[in-house]
Image (cartoon, rainbow, N blue to C red; front, side, top):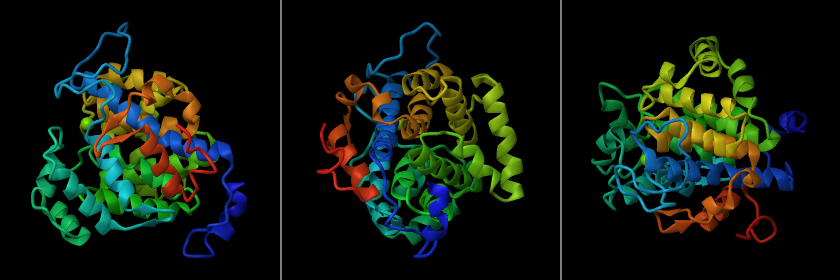
Length: 330
Ligand SMILES: [Mg+2]
């Protein structure tokens, strides 16, 4: 269905408003945001640890920042900031920059190094924030933009891939001026959009195969390694490249099962809340909400005083769907 609509889609500003989403597609869009948030909240209790393979992974809270059970961390807090600037097929980068600063001003305990280095200057426009990011030197490829990119795939589900990738890359650039961080966000966001349309994670590989040769030659061997390797092969998962590999490994090893995907991320160790948030976005986009335990979604909460109900409503808003007529129930 999506392929058939592509020509029409590019007629009006790269997007089409008339593509009808069915109930399963709407549910998968909600699944993208909830899957990421439950991954974040589960992973938060295990951050920087390496649980044994037989540990039962659950939404226990704790961890280095002593989270309440079900409380999400900076990954989801920043994703709500991304969503604040999204509407169906469009992005307002200034609104996202402002939302990031509003969150920064709450003095979050768990802010990434690179994100802090940018937001501490409290730039008030996207242009100045992006320029600030590009002025940083040293290691600029942290995983902090990939962890928050899930809403982009939701908002651009009716758009062509180029528009989705452009938005994802520009949002990444606000804090992470790094070509690999940008490309990771482009690839993952389009994979999420395709996953919502189809229920299938193969969109990541398919979209990558359509990219320029330099992008393909960098990422395809990394995905190969994630599919055939082990977490020890990509253990530096604070780096966006290893974070994406860990997430892809977790999803493929679990064959898309959301709970297993999140458990895999936790057992892979390292930056567990972030790898689980990244993986949970794509796994949730493909599996939908039925793949996410309600006892987890019922416990979810975090900045800005939200619960799963607010994430669900946000997914439907940026999707352009009326929550009353679709999935507004909790
Ligand atoms: Mg976090």
